[in-house]
Length: 75
Length: 138
Image (cartoon, rainbow over all chains, first blue to last red; front, side):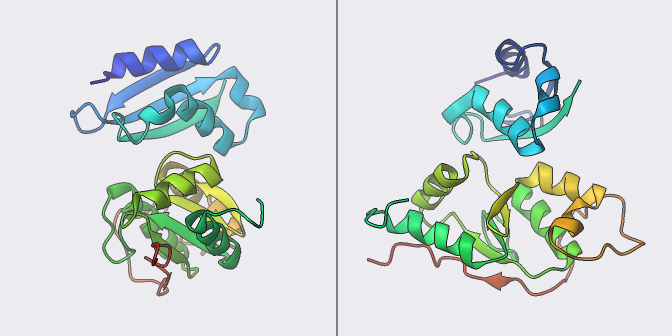
């Protein structure tokens, strides 16, 4: 079961300079919310920013990670 | 997309996106959403007041699979306006709060629009429903 710490580390490892705050929405280890700030988001639309974060987890989204709610911003 | 593609579900989804100015792919129906994220998105759309088509993706797992292939977006709900993916629950909610959702749907934003997206569905324009239209009938 993924933890908020796993998700945070994977986002920050995959997206250069990213800072992520991850919370477990239900305490069940499968519905998460992530606030992610990254320099490269400055050049991306909101849709592309979210796609970039979802891509870190690939097919795990909808699988072990049932839901990943996102809030992204450039920094 | 090739004319000879033998993928009726993908073609039906692409056709539905093409044929409806505003279309929401969701879990459940606007009256009975089967997931909190879908419910929240419906509430934001109802608050904008523009009619929308809705497709329940739950009856057949292939709908979600093909939809995500078309949209390059892994989660449900997904809102399309004029053939373009606008986003999922987070983006739609954020755009409601900034007023962008009114703009993208071509609706004038009421001056007294609430600052935060509504949590529960309010009675609004009746959604145009095509749910289950995409289920393989063969």
